[in-house]
Image (cartoon, rainbow, N blue to C red; front, side, top):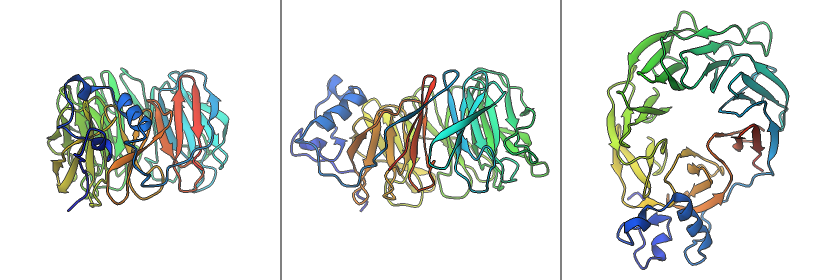
Length: 382
C-alpha cells in the first residue's frame, strides 16, 4: 500500500508530526490561517518536529547583480553558444529589453549584454534544432509574441524579431512544450481572448503554425508538462473558481478534465509523490496542500489530509538530490521523505515570486536564481 500520507491521531501536537493537518483536529478560522504561519509553527515547535528524513540542501551566500530595471522573467541557456554543452547563461526580461548575464562556469555571472526586444516574459529554447538557443519574448498585456533566432554565423548574436502568427490581445503568458508528437518544441499562448497552440513547422524550423484553441474563457494557463508519461506534453489550467483542469495530448491537446478544486492562483504543480511512473498533483488550497495521485492515465485520486503551509504558488523539483521531488514555496523548500513520501522537513530560504532552480555549475545540483526588484540574486548549492 502506498505510504503517501499518514495522519497521526494521538493529540493536536502529534497531528503535526508527519507534516499533515488532520481534518478532524481544530477547525473554524484556525484551519484557514496563512501558510507562512503554518510553516513557522512547524519550525518553532520542538515537540512536533520529527527527526530529519533526508539531507537538506546547503546554499552558499547570495551573490547579487544589479539590473537596469526591475526583472519580470527569467530564461536559461547557452546564450553565447561558446562551446557545445557549456554552462547556462541567464536572460532577464526587464521591460525595455532582455538583459543577458554570462556564466563563467562556476556560477558567477558577468560580461553583460542585451537583446533590444521589449519583454516582460522570456523563454530560452532551441526552436531551430541547430544546437543554438533561440528566444521568445512578450510583454504582459501586449499584442505580439516574437521570436529572436540565434544567428548561425555570429555566436551570441540574435536575428531580427519574427512575430508568431496572431493576432494577440492582452498576452498573459507563454509556455513551451512538445505538444504534437514531433521532436521540436511548440508554443502555447494565453492571452485575454484565448489559449492557443502554435506548433513548430517541420519544413521551416523556427516558424510556427496557428493550431487549436484549448480551454475556455477564465482558464489561466499554469503549466505545460508530460503528466501521463506518454511522451507528449500536456497543459494545465486553473479557472477563476479554483478548478484545476488538465488537457492531455495524444498528438494534439484534447478537451480539459477537472481533476481538483479549491486551488489558489498558480498553486498547482506536478511531481512524483508515490514512486509511480506518472506524475501526481499537488494543489495549494486555503487549508494547505492536497495531493492527488495519478493511479491510471488521466485519473487522479485525492488523498486525505493537507500539507502544512502549501497555500500559494508551488514548484516541484528534487532540490537536495535524493531522487525525490520536493515542494518549493515562496519562503523555503518542503522536502519529501524518500521512503515514506511525507513532507516533514522544511528548509527556510528566501525565494520570492520570480525564481528558478537551475544547475549553473554543472555539478548536478540545482542552484537558486531569483529576481528581487532590480537585483538578480544567485545562491549556488554546495
